[in-house]
Image (cartoon, rainbow, N blue to C red; front, side):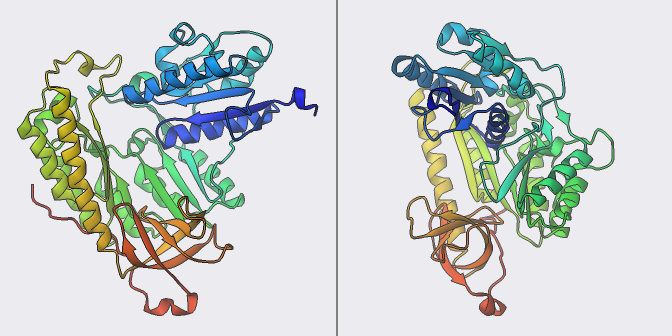
Length: 458
């Protein structure tokens, strides 16, 4: 192909694993249209921003990127995808005149038609419809990771949490049939993948349209597919987290013993204002039956600090819950008002300095917890799926344990994509370092046990 006629694209992705997987779908579709991926914005003829609107900062970052691109490369075609695209719609063209294409997350199946319209010279092409169920896998998906793969099993959200924009940007819940999911898993095994992650905004709200399997039963069925070594799932809504999920994890070694269970607040009064469908006590009861698992399931969470009206006492309840659960990882943020949500109209009188103080205090406490938990891994041996060379040190290999610890170790260059055992020698808050255990030495390794709760007090 003449270099002048070469069609190239670059996608920058903001947000969660679902956005990453959406970018894989878009990339696969663009490849079928003759586009080639490149490594930078500068090389690309068509630049896409796959957006997240969960927090204001993430949304504003997109507009900042667009502003820079307008000044430095006004000739490039620009597409905006995802949640901010769905949220802003035609307003994007006014706020960012260099945008040619706006596509919501339920409309990626229409990308071939939409891209061709841009190629034909139309300056403002948009599709933010949510009136069908063509929101799952596209015909071709360009997998970004060579060993683990995402599968969307449910899209959208039926909850009305006061702080969350997802129901407006992703639409109502729509589940795929379990048969379709299992067919995709089989295709991934045939392509050489051994780890899959099932995705959904509320993944455990999954309802099989054919009524064949519950979410827990689907987990078990995926774990039993020959060739699958690991199955992960995210994100779980506490109100739909039931003992059967833990029972499935106990019964199927391929199901990773790690659960992401966003609590958002440790105060029942704040949870009520947030319109979450559980109390502090109910959440801790769910944690208790997770902790009873013989596999010692690692738990991670999300927390919103300084939700409108949060008192010092309510904040302290969040700190005490974090201490009681002993999270292996926590994502925490200061509350950010979002369009179309109930909390956008709530009175917020807390000074910015106090919000920042609370967040820093909580994050420092969580850091201490993570350091303590990681130290308990020293001397244990864990199974690691080797991803490749460490980002920070090209002489070190890196991978993840079943409980999602990053594990670094020295080993031969032939190991990426393989499962190996590593004995942990030292730890940090987020990573572990260890020694590769040779196969003949595995009779004496310690069991791959994960974290223990700091305490279980309420």
